[in-house]
Length: 227
Image (cartoon, rainbow, N blue to C red; front, side):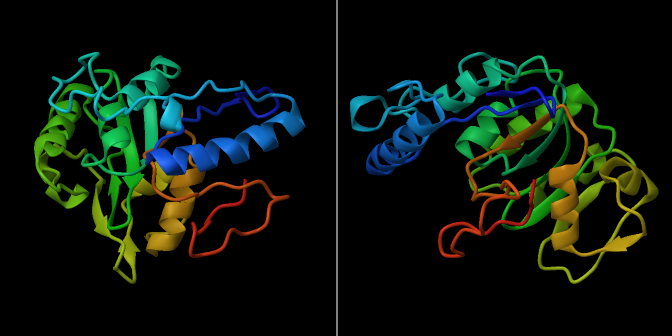
């Protein structure tokens, strides 16, 4: 979906368990038809009538290999010419992990999941790709497993349980925050708004909503940013 007024590309991959995809597909067909843009049954993974994206994935693909997970592969094909990335997820995730191994030119500058916040102001594309591959292959990895020696000056990995996070001048400039200290909530909010070529979601919750939309029930997915 191309939004000309804000120069934004939205790429949606429908994934999850078979029953969940069927339910989501039914709802989106109804809403999409109302707005005149729904593409009938054009799912990346189509519920009971489609295929299992995990069975079609090779989770041991080499960096830059084209044989990564089917959902990540299709999505990244739409965005592969983009370079700087901020993301929601971690390298243990199927879509997030596979997507972040798609190209050697990726510069992942910031990301967070339900545990940690990762910041790398000026990443080395080749070295960071190799490290992401290592985390992808490491069972149950988290951003805390990232080799700190490979993070560029001013970056780091911060637990979301911290009450206060100290930001370097490099991190402040990258994310657009004033002040040397912040808290995890403010930092994640700023990451979602920072200028990057791509905002990569790895299937964790719902973080973006239109100003005309209401807050979703917390039991379903918390929202922390108004677009």
